[in-house]
Length: 189
Image 1 (cartoon, rainbow, N blue to C red):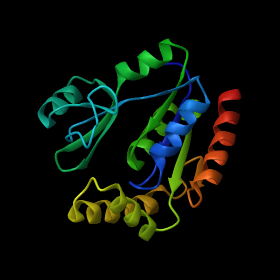
Image 2: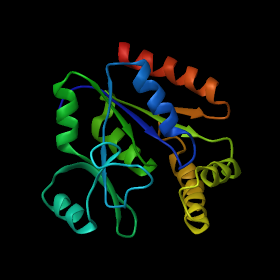
Image 3: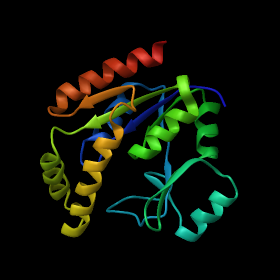
């Protein structure tokens, strides 16, 4: 495998997707890696655009066939992963891969790609701010939000010291400017 990768990880509600989408518009050499998942689509998500959606059974079959760079069972029966074919597709175009991936997946991808990868952990100012952002989305039940908030607290603890850069998303404009600066430097080297 050849090429560079940029990894963005964060708890749900930290602003990861907003920052990643901004960078994809700013840097044409960046290309989003579409992850695979066994969860159901949310809102207007479409297969092959936000995620590749598979049943849990099909996901397990792809794992057995060694089709993933990395994968994780985030919740029982809920899988996420990066298909090898997706990495090959993007590098064949000469692009830098952007991963928008959960915290454990981010640490795994950094380990796999080593110096070819730059990993960024996006952190919200607090767990309470995360909860309010998730409520504001209006896409999850109260039970699902509390589950995500509990996971966020453990992810923030797990991530400590395992990423190349921690970007605190307290003010969106400041976070976007900081993200542009650090990613620009990585792409240029």
